[in-house]
Length: 331
Image (cartoon, rainbow, N blue to C red; front, top):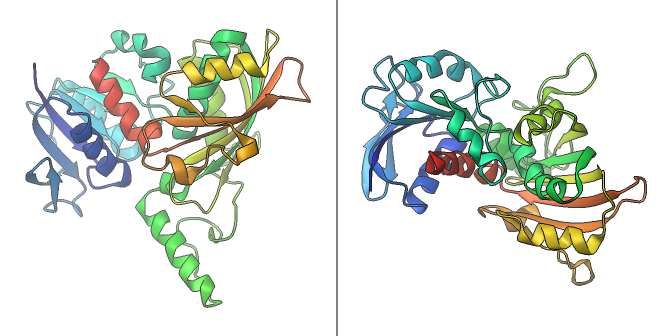
């Protein structure tokens, strides 16, 4: 079996750390691993299998003799360094939003459009985490019934904003128990015991950039240029795993029985739908799990041919690290 020389940019961040675990756990054929970080992280060590490896600072020479690079260090770093990595001959799997909508860059969820990987020119984009979790359920239903449009609200965990946000929530919870308040650093308002209808920056339309990603990226991933999605993205005081409430309108008549059958068979998805016994997807249950979960499946009472459902998924895994490694496996 051929083995690959792998680099991970952003190796000490929330997604980078998860990526290393996924590569280990799925026994990806790694010949050598080069963890790369900021000047601040350089010199730290990380454990990979039984080896301790020193994190290197990102430089022009970081991609020499590297076959594949995972980028999880934010948009600015991707914009600057991805072209340098490609020039060095490495194939890049990028987790930022910078290249997702470029026409010649495949945007891939392996269970949905794995074939698109074949069209790469040295760069493949990983989708937005909320979009990835929602599409795991929307796409199989689309194949069965033909999706026209969805209305959705997301319930997004703080780990989507990185390690500092996790610390901020933890700290605010501790202080709230003593009736004290902490000045928020990561978010514009306290996140503990609060929900913020604000993820990413606001656009002139009144939507945020995050809210438009489900429509824009969904069209590209599902090869469905007419797909429409009106989304409200909400940050909630949950450490890990995103949830999305979806109401979809379809071209063909939908029944709950057929929908459940379709969802139960969908790859990377588990049907957890027994409301009578209080069984439904929850972020606590999917945190650390590869598969997403879908439940609360019911006929939507406001749509013709409508179906409502609730999806949860670990956004550090299916929304980021796991999806990136699955792309590498396809390659």
